[in-house]
Amino acid sequence: MIKTNYPNSEYADDALMQLGDTYFEVGHTDNAYNAYNDLVVSYDISPLYNDAQLKLGLIAYNKGDLNTAIGHYKAIFRHNPSSKQSESALLGLKEIYINDLGKSEEYVEYVSSLPGYNVSNAGADSLAYMVGTLRYNEGEYEKAIAGYSNYLTKYPKGAHRLSATYYRAESYTLLKKYDQALADYESLVNMGSSEFYVTSLKKAALISYNYTQSFEKAYSFYDQYYLKLSDEDEKYKAALGALRSAFRISQSDAIIKYAAIVAIHPKANADEQVTAMYYAGKTHYKKNDLNAAKDNFDRAGKKANNNQAAESRYLVAEILYKQGDKSGAEAQCNAANDANASYPFWIAKSLLLLSDIYVDRNDLFNARAALEAVIENFSDDKDLLASANEKLVNIENLEKQNTRIKPAATSSNLLEMQSGGGN
Image (cartoon, rainbow, N blue to C red):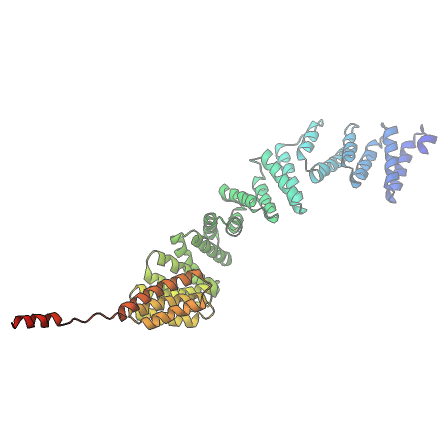
């Protein structure tokens, strides 16, 4: 109406601006957009041109039409904007390029093309980093990874490379992409001391042990983590993780070192203390240090009642037998069987050992009884059954030897010789 009836009025542009503002305030954004657009199309030399373009950019942005919004904001710089108008347009462009599109390079390239404007290398670095950070803070972790990866590719030695690497690792972790997360945490560890160093050690250790099951790496990370800590709770967790990792890779010295820490640590519960003693016992046993092994197994067997404790009670008996203390081994087998009521496998192992003890005493009756108890009650366990049957064959052979009647010597020849000698 205004443009048609009063196209040459000096107030036409003001009227269109006021019309647009009125529509905008009452929420009729389509009508507002048309009024502002009529102004910029018909009155491109109006002093209201740039303000109308700002409002057109805002309406287009709020409707999700980002490319149109960009066009409106860029148009301002072709019409000698004031410093305030320039600042508003750049903020709008930055919002779209950085926050919405994640294209910091395009924003930097455009701003740098404007006369009198320049984005420093540090500024460009920060803008590129911001793309990933905005996505991370919004919980859009796939887009965060893309943003951080783009930053690290463009600025491999950038000011934010540590933060970008760390939060990319965090994003991978939240998406359960543990291999990629581990690679980033490990990279941070290899970079050396930083605000992310200790946390990266911890997370690399957890992922290595629990998810990728890279136990050598897990031990290395836990060991380094332990040495960097002062907090007693975290220090204990690191020691326990190092112990478990060391046991998985049979690293004897490390097992003994961390077992000694965990076994007496005030933060350790009974099961964790048993694990430490059990691991130390196993390690000493493997090294044929039987006394040290026996000491650890004995402590473990008395500390709690779980499978490791049950095995430890049996292994004390086995060591006593190996050391030639067969009476002690027998007593320990009987005591272990009483304590291991909930662990039938270790009762069976004790019965097999008792059978050996009885055989050594030539008590074949009780040796056979022990084996028959295993055969009768553990028929589903092929290994136990095979061992029991093998030992039973040996007992049967011994029984045959004991019951075989040797032929008595006769005197017939002697008599014949005596008879012959009388003639």
